[in-house]
Image 1: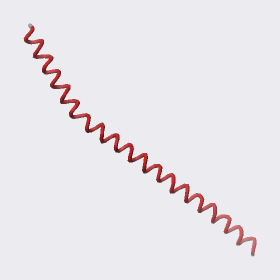
Image 2 (image 1 turned 90 degrees about the vertical axis):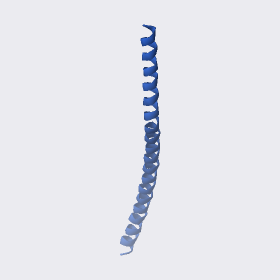
Image 3 (image 1 turned 120 degrees about the vertical axis):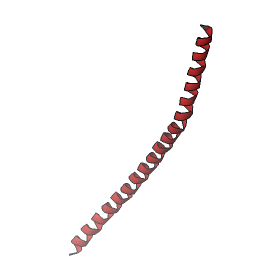
Length: 69
């Protein structure tokens, strides 16, 4: 009885170690990917913000040209 119990716990331990060795790299990659997406989205927000300011400036340039006509 004790032999089966100890063998079962050894097998469970090996399975747990294998699962951890399999999933830890996957979790690390997911974390890196999420960090990369966050950086990309921040850059996209920055670019769209800059474009927004450029459109805002162009709007006033067009208004000044209309005033001259």
